Amino acid sequence: MLDCVVTDAKIVNHTGIFEGEIGIRDGRITQVAKGISETTDRKVSARGKMVLPGLVDGHTHMEFPFMGTVTADDFESGTVASACGGVTTIIDFSIQPKGSSLLETYELWRKKADPKVCVDYSLHMVIREANQANLNQIRQIIRKGVQSVKLFMTYRRDGLLMSDINIYRIMKEVAKYGGVVGLHCENNDYIECLVSEFLAAEKTEPYYHAKSRPPEAEVEAVRRATTLAGFANANMYVVHMSTRGAMESVVEARNRGLDVYAETCPHYLTFTENMYRGLAAKNYVMSPPLRRREDKEALWLGLASGQIRTVASDHCCFTSEQKDLGKEDFSRIPNGVPGTEVILPILYHGVSRGLISLERLVQLTSYNPARQFGLFPRKGTIQVGSDADIVVLDPKKRQRLSKDNLHSRMDNSIYERITVTGFPVLTLSRGRVVHEDGQFVGKRGGGSYVPGRPHSVRPKDL
Ligand code: URP
Ligand code: ZN
Ligand code: ZN
Image (tube, rainbow, N blue to C red; front, side):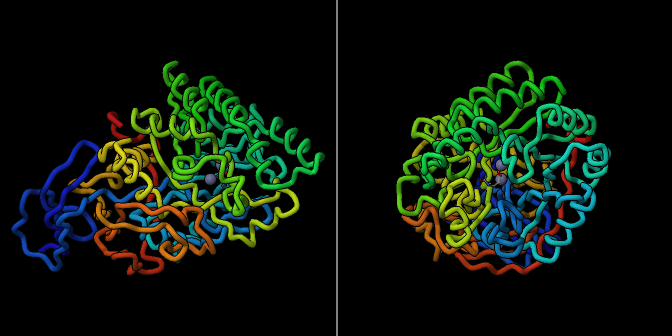
């Protein structure tokens, strides 16, 4: 007896499309076939819809202390938004409180997330300091499933900036145990210099946030980081990449034989720097900032050609009130925007416009992030043995991406004026329905921690 059968399913995997049925028992997919004869407790019809692997959002910041405040979404509200957007796994950034060890940080994040998460989750670790104690614990956190470390090449004032030598040392240590190093690539010195110049000239508005973090600051940092990855023989991943130049540098590094991949985010695929001229400019402040139209177009081409490996949200919400911390000084506006709920609709919009194929959408949003972070084949595919993490998308459903239709705790939506055609209508997390037609129907704490497997212990063909 099965727990559930999804019928009339147009199943989209990374390799192609198959019309059939999906059988589910005990949270796992037990059959994918033209027709399933076994009896079942529940049938879910997907007639006229598309059935995709649940998304793996590889970049979120829930309950994240940053720039003098804490993100508005906690692990409950944030993962409710994820579930309603078809995301069935998030990978969240744990960050060391000053003086805490990596293992203590891992424990702290498990304690915060476990009772609240509404979908499954895994963890990255932000390392603030390359001291010996932290280096010594890298092996242990990788053993616990935190196989990816994030380092910042900016945010000196917030105690996050990592020097080149320390990036190199951490890369070497992470590489020893088969982990990956994610880099926030922006040249800190150049940015600090521009910020002081603008502030000295009393140019304090959010518009100068983008002006003080120009594309070349990102490109230079990507080049430097890939050079260090080459020295250290490390796997490297550029998080939230926003420019054509950065993408070209990643491709160039890969052509040199390096293991360097990159992600971009829905906001860079949707908006341009023009948003910093509007009344709600502060709500679009993130780093790197929104870019020129030519960058946005290049990123879409990079998705289509496979030059960009993944799309993740960088869900890092601050309400309008929190953004007002930088009312008098753009450099004090907490950086970050929401996004976990819109990855699928924004990318499906790209499918409708002929920019990417459906299979590419699945690669970018579930298959590739699951492989990148050691969660495949449990996550990232609809196949026998995988977790029954499934999203049903109605290609005809029109939805405005307004605050009232989204589920985060945010008091506004940066996507407010955008209406898409094609929206998730049902999400299954390990076989349980957690979202149905815009309503969250799962439960707080229903998700679980899923450890990532380091590269060294993955099957060879991955
Ligand atoms: O502006 C951003 N991206 N905020 C989140 C923190 C980070 O750098 O990922
Ligand atoms: Zn970052
Ligand atoms: Zn981030």
